[in-house]
Image 1 (cartoon, rainbow, N blue to C red):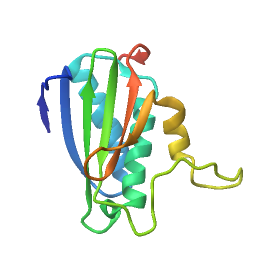
Image 2 (cartoon, one colour):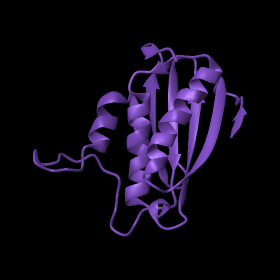
Image 3 (cartoon, rainbow, N blue to C red):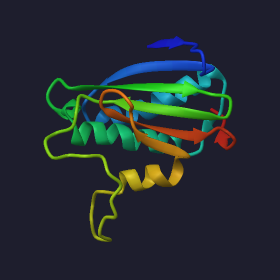
Length: 142
């Protein structure tokens, strides 16, 4: 893991994970450990939002294929935190869109949750992946 200070963010941390379902929990743990190291509260719902972005990378991109990986970056700003998940590119026919799933659907609510809890989210401007930003005002200490 690399931690550095950028021009606009107060701190930046990066980590890479195997493209397997167990990595979603590892992303949550990594975020909580990173926030503890930075001595900042974890914004409400940040781990949930990061989990959804990581799960999408595993389920809907080449990152979830054998030997696939995805990268996660956490940026600390004065008023918000940003989580980015960079994947290995979408599987054929997959586009990250917020959909309204049927009430009986077992999947399809991930980006609905991201849209609900993030102040801002979307595709990364370069490469493939997604980001979400959450305000720092509300959080829990770890």
